[in-house]
Image (cartoon, rainbow, N blue to C red):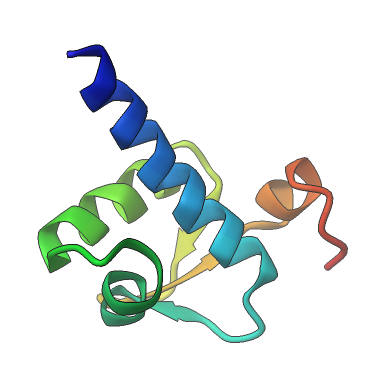
Length: 78
């Protein structure tokens, strides 16, 4: 069970790292292809979790962006 928790954390952290450096809005498909190599459901779960804690903002059904708070936490200038 511990390795599953680490894997869940790592996926979300990978998405967050990618998001705070992105120059364009993120799409679910882009996360699946460029970051996680996973299913759409897995990507949506990661993004939903990050939205719920205020690190990502949902712009539409399939597009997201990092919040200013996330960028500040990760040391990325807006």
